[in-house]
Length: 383
Image (cartoon, rainbow, N blue to C red; front, side, top):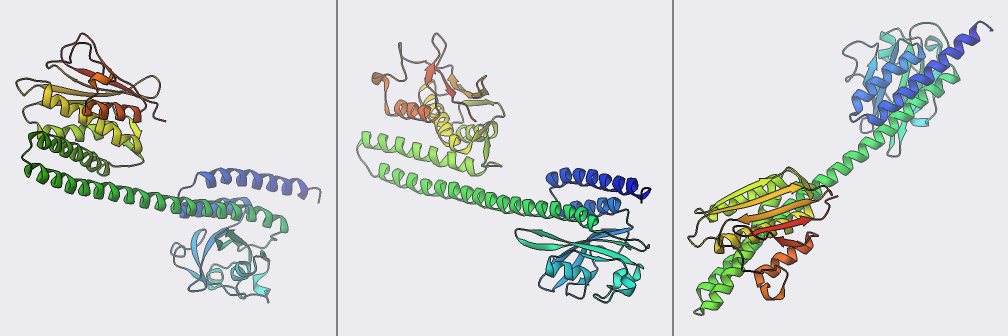
């Protein structure tokens, strides 16, 4: 006994080290089958056994599928079915939740020996349950053709593996459900933006019809402006649902697409967009897009007396995790002493622009002593 004790201690310490390393792998695992395969390899190593397999329970067929394993014939894993009834060692562990040790399968009276094990000459086996909060996943089993004894201490080692696998299964299933829910939410958000865009296009059409039916020039002008702004909101929603991800919108792609659409409506102007690749929350994208749309549209209408010129849109990150947004032209410029926030300059367009600036968490400023109109807005931190 004194000669065996150090060896037994070394085996248990080695098992604890293997189990600890596997725990890290289980936490990081993103796919189940590779994790199960790794579990069978390390479990066999820790038990100094020739064979190990992971069995997944198939409730509709009431059977166990060998889904991972080491030591078995090449065609066994993924195809072999083992009974899940109480007369099967693995089935007994599954149905009762109790571990099973059988050190002499040839003399076993409690269970039958599954064909897979008989074909491989298995003489002893140990089974433990793989469980999680969703139910019993299956069984982890270690087998060997050599004489020897699986012990109660081996159950603790194997159950540790089974518990880690069960926890990983539970986590991966929860993550899969969360991912599916997020994907559905994003799909619904895209559909909502698409439908909003279509609804607003209908409203814009009605405003156009009403404008054409009016003989009052002021009414025509007001309805035309209203139609333009409704179309702007529709255009922003159209760009929003086309983005690769709604969780975080890439400013560069979003503004470039928006400016391209504005360019189509103003072919005599040159609209230049220089935007850094910065992600912003989706709820900031709409006011940001409307803000840019309003300023660019104003520049198209009023900046150049000859009706053509360059309009620049810039977006870059600042040092405070925010965004600096600018719209500039080289046209006739702003009236002397122009203050975008002052009551005397608060046309409907400027009131809209200032309202959008507040939604974006910043104050609108204009650059003095420059050719044209240079508007700038520092957007609040994006985090």
